[in-house]
Image (cartoon, rainbow, N blue to C red; front, side, top):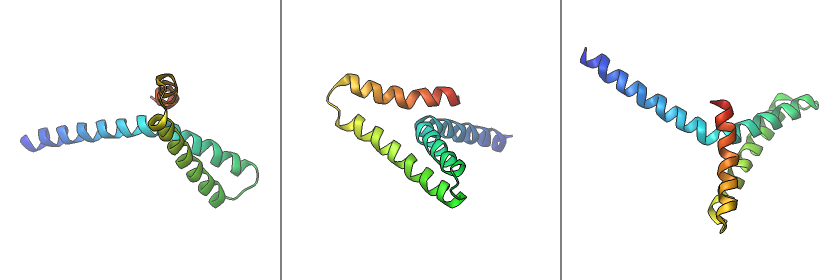
Length: 92
């Protein structure tokens, strides 16, 4: 009984961590998928689609993080936050 209760708490904690990661990385994942499928539909192979998708996802994440860190204006920071939040809301 106690073990089942403990595992329930651990499972809920893991689901909360997974939900947080989904919210943080929803924009890069969507950008990577869009670019990867675009390359695939343009005639590139699966390896090229995977590579360009990963690279574009990393660049999207890095660009939004750089904007958020280096922007002096709060309006620009809010735009970066909203750009990250909208795909997370659509995924959720």
